[in-house]
Image 1 (cartoon, rainbow, N blue to C red):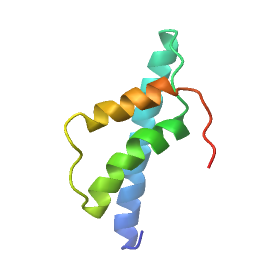
Image 2: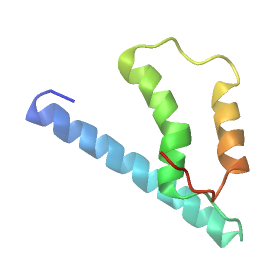
Image 3: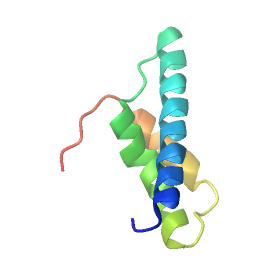
Amino acid sequence: MPGSAQAQGERAQHFERRIHAIERIREQAAARGENPPPLEQILDQLIAPLYLRAIFGIEPPATGYPELLVDRLLSNAGESETA
């Protein structure tokens, strides 16, 4: 994504904070004996669809859409995706 060096740095910091937060949640789930989805699967199936809407100005998701994404993610937890 183009932009100034400062903007690129801010985006990178924002993304790093999100990754840290997701990893903490995954660690807490594992400590409870749960089997959390891999980070890449969380990014692909939950974060990307929501960020896509925000970054490109697509209409906000319908009520319940984020919950639907979480349900799908958890029902497929641990399954590898093929491109």
